[in-house]
Image (cartoon, helix red, strand yellow):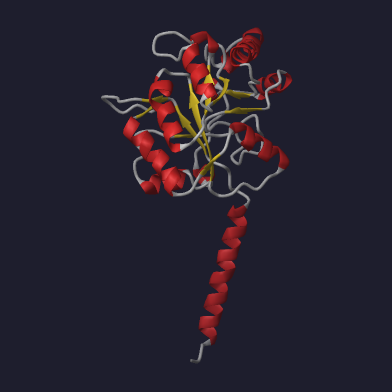
Length: 259
């Protein structure tokens, strides 16, 4: 079969375009970090809540697609060393330390064989609707990992330097005392941070910190401002989950000021 010059040229052009697109996005991959707060039933939609059924749907998606759930520590160490993560890597995180993290999320995570990083605040443990220390210890023994969310989830850019140090240092001290394990990662309440706060965390012995979609580091080169992706009850289709977990979602997100 005779192939025309036009066909050869078109094929060559498409190949060049495809190679160019691959080159442009190949180094833009970032390991998606899933962020949850509540796993509970809600009479109306809330940004910080996912139903038990939808949370299980998300875990089923990870399982069916062969995702490998890694820890916050695996991610931070890999970023520092310049590691190229497999495209099916993901981190699961929870903020605030709500009681349903133990009663609803924890059993499902164990059922699917996944471990998550929970960022909790010692000052709220044992209060109404929150985890107890017994819950935390059972989860820790069950393979879950814990980081700090400050003592009482204070928005760090709005408080004094003295208060920032208290939130950062005292929460780490108490959590390590209770868990008998290092606490090396911090999740900024409401995602707020600045360069001075990042320095305080480094100087306090934290190996990294997680925000929301704040700051200018869209591709997670700085381990003290790792972006996360919120998941909730709007995320019900495989198409949405595939987009958010593709590793390229940050390229198209609208980033906010860090504080």
